[in-house]
Image 1: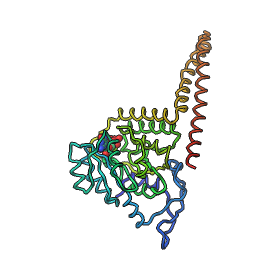
Image 2: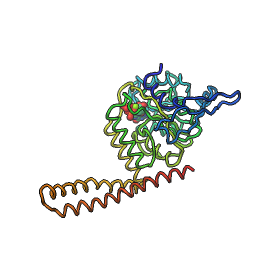
Image 3: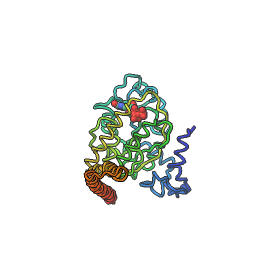
Image 4: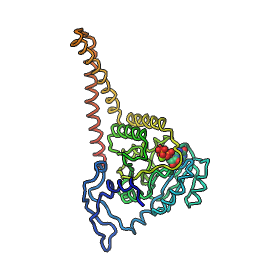
Length: 349
Ligand SMILES: Nc1nc2c(ncn2[C@@H]2O[C@H](COP(=O)(O)OP(=O)(O)OP(=O)(O)O)[C@@H](O)[C@H]2O)c(=O)[nH]1
Ligand SMILES: [Mg+2]
């Protein structure tokens, strides 16, 4: 059974590439025409034509993927998740455990997954271990809490050949993402895209596929969940990145991540990325923020003059000075953002 979220993302996402191509006698891969407009979120990188892959080729591709699942106390979710990963045709399953105190490890082993204890801290420790161990060409990361849907792995894998990094994006209005998470994810995604000059639809998504050789060369320094953004930032600078629409389900078991702390850590990390990758943009955005007090001062000075008939030249002068500064900041920010996009396009040519 496909649940509602899955049906709706199927309608919106890859399945909207309503396929009209036919399989050839000899070949596996057949070009298919899009019969509908691609969704706006997919426009930046999805190709106008997609490859329709035969079941035989799909089976070969699936063997080239290791599904990596970091776990910390996921005894409730890990069993059903592994069953579904296998049912989706993926048998290389690596669970990297952060020393769960419950039965996660036993359950995962009993279901046939390879289980390794991590070194290092947090989800990053799990990713570091996995990248040392994985020897298949592709590496798919997904949470062990049942929230991501193994039936979506194919959506990444069919495009794996052409991209270094394929990041999932969840339905924005999913009932399984809390209101706080929705707002937090939006803020993180907007901040990330603004500072990186990118169009990532869901920068907090924990389901993505990478070429294993690529992840082996990344510099991973973060311990927390910012690892997802750390990987995306490096892949965007030095790789070919695209996005896949996915389902998002109710997690099983208790949440581990303290929402606020995690959100602020990620935001500060993204600001740090801005300093590293696009300092002109970051500082000019900061400068343009003085437009807010500038308008406040000018409005207040106008109110004093027009309503109370009191002239305060100092307020006008201060307001105008801030206005000029802010306008300069805004102009530089706009130019820096445009240059960043052009640079990225040129570097991909
Ligand atoms: N190996 C390892 N896995 C971890 C660690 N912390 C969390 N995880 C796992 O990483 C995945 C993501 O963690 P979640 O708690 O689901 O975090 P989240 O998805 O941001 O938060 P929710 O919205 O509550 O699901 C889950 O599979 C966790 O079990 C850790 O320190 N080590
Ligand atoms: Mg989760």
